[in-house]
Image 1 (cartoon, rainbow, N blue to C red):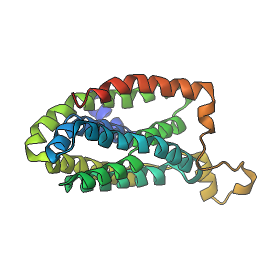
Image 2 (image 1 turned 30 degrees about the vertical axis):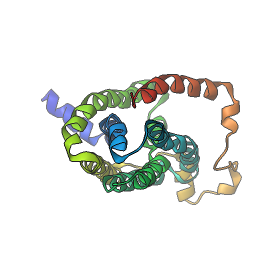
Image 3 (image 1 turned 45 degrees about the vertical axis):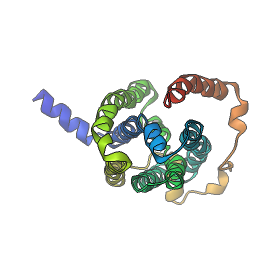
Image 4 (image 1 turned 135 degrees about the vertical axis):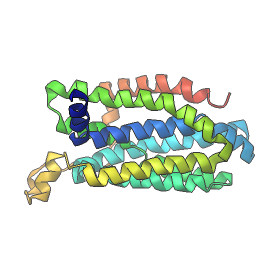
Length: 241
């Protein structure tokens, strides 16, 4: 009985769809990334070209993440999350048909523009959960990341024999499922967007630029960015070895 109750509570929890989106993000990442360098080398790319092609996705994502975060503040979390999932799905579908380096680069650029679902997901959790319970709920996507990181390479290894089409097709199916679940289940969590939808006077609120680099002038964001770089760089730099 307790197990059935827990399952029902999990399914009915409005954050379950959000957690699934975070899980899909890391599962796709860990399924694709270990095998992309080998695939690029098979396409004829040199090792330096492979490094540049792989970094293009993250480079574009750095700027698009700032843009999507600001847009979610202005227009709401739900539409931006759905847009990002749809764009990421399109990027993975294009990747499945990538038989040349230019097509591969185009697919990774599209993915880099839209693949910032995790940031929006964490913001939704911050909106919906009371401060006292926020740490606990924020840790659940982290558990999904660990699970996805464990499962992804195994799935990628099994699908590698089908090449980039098999890997990217699997990723596309995951993002299609995440997109459908988000459309059906995710509710708007941004109070400002809800007020706007109800006809509140938006002119009385402070107008903020959609894209701004001023945040990087502050000490805390720069420290967090440095920490993220120090963790991510050794992993990404070893991919082509």
